[in-house]
Length: 146
View 1 (cartoon, rainbow, N blue to C red):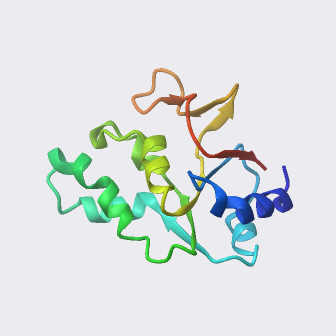
View 2 (spheres, one colour):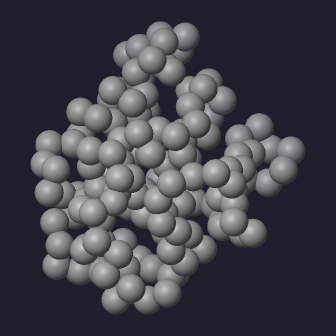
């Protein structure tokens, strides 16, 4: 897929129930996304969550993850690009990253820079046997390999 295909998909997002695009196996830079002349806000999820969770007891992390992220959405016309999402795979958060993004994408347009791979219809993060290994074959949204 090309950047022009991504532009077409972004233009169609308003018509989707889950306004969600996963960019996988990517060779696209963040600068290329920003240069698409659309209203994009880039969010570094590792930074946002690590800062906000630092004042919350670890046992309560799962309760606050979505709330912390939702606070960043201030304009439904924006497209929010999530980069550095690795923190979501930490077992202490007890979060299913795909379900989290699906839920948030009903109200907001999201592009996820997937840090793993997309293979055989599955989103995969980390190697098998790794404590943060994650695999998901049932998901909403569009997959783009650029």
